[in-house]
Structures are given as structure tokens and as C-alpha cells.
Image 1 (cartoon, rainbow, N blue to C red):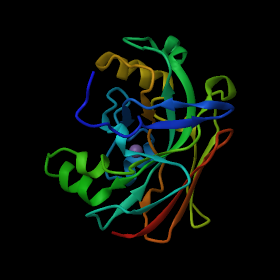
Image 2 (cartoon, protein in one colour):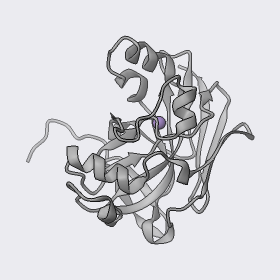
Image 3 (cartoon, protein in one colour):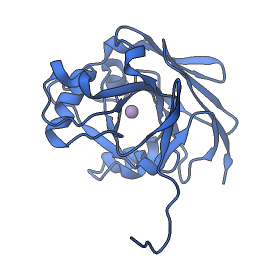
Length: 230
Ligand code: MN
């Protein structure tokens, strides 16, 4: 089939111990999945009704990158998160079989133009400009699922060497199986889909010159450097 022009190569992520990369299809993100973060946002979390938003796969940013300070924002935040990579179709899967669809896990930063998110959400308008923008989905190397068992690993974000977020992933309101179960009611999840599982408390603003390092015990870290405003 002839195309009028070629797109860049499909967004993809490195995989630990594999020369082949993981192609990224869709990026789903859950909101308010840690109680203390829901409170710091001035809201509450409903454990029976998680809500999601979506970022374009073209927002993907490789860990280790230096990005320009995001456009048209005066308050851009880091949100350190566990990212789940889907490796098998999942549709209406019960929680007790949901992990069968997981390819692997990674550290990720859900970069957020908080001022634009609030200007949208507080006015009943979409969150897209706050959440879905260039380089807004920073993800590290994927560790295949066989090499990482979900437990109470620490999730930590350091900004310029100072710890800003520090929690454990077992304090998620809805865990990974429950998130996949819920999301697979609304979408036919497919290999290549990513799921950001929410951020703990301690989110905050970035500035030009910052270096962010996010870690989860047992996974490759996610790193990001912030450059000047364009
Ligand atoms: Mn988030």
C-alpha cells in the first residue's frame, strides 16, 4: 500500500535482556490511585470507580532524555509511576487472570501540565492539554514479568538528588490486577498497550536544569533532564 509519506518508526521501549524493543500502541493512565495523592490534589479516591485518561503513544519519551521545558505551562509536575506493559489480548478478564496479560513492568513519569489540567478539569473541560503533550510519557527499560513479582517494593522520585516521593506500590488503592480487570471492560486491551498505575503523594513542579530519577525496587530506573524553555 502506498502512503503519501512515511511516519517515524513506531514508538517503542527497550526490554531488559532482549535486543528487540517493545512497540507501544496506546497509553492508559489511572488517576488518584494512592490515597495520600488524592488528598494532596484536593480530592478523594473512589475505590469502586477508578477513572482513566489517555496519552498518545507519540508522547513517549525515552528514559535518559533531556527535554525542553514543556510548552505553555508555568507549573509542570513530575508524577512517578509503575508502568505495566500489556503483552497479550485482554477483554473482560477477571482480576485473578489479569496478570496473564502482562508482558512486563517499568518505571515511568506521567508528566503533567498541572495548570492546564486544572484549567480544564475545574471548568468541566477535558484534561488532554494537561496530560497529553510531547514527551509527557517518560518510560524506562521494561523488565519482563518473570523478573518482577508485584509486592511492596518502594517507589521513589528524586529531584536533583532530593527525595520527593517515597511510598510502596502495595499502597495503590486498586492494584494492577484490578486495574486491568476494570480497563478491559471498556477496551479490548492489546499487546503494546501501556498502563500507568498512578502516582503516590509528593508530586511537584519541575524547572529548567532539573534532573529527575525515579526508581522502583527491582526495576530499571527512569531518568529525565529538563532543558530550557523553547
Ligand atoms: Mn499520574
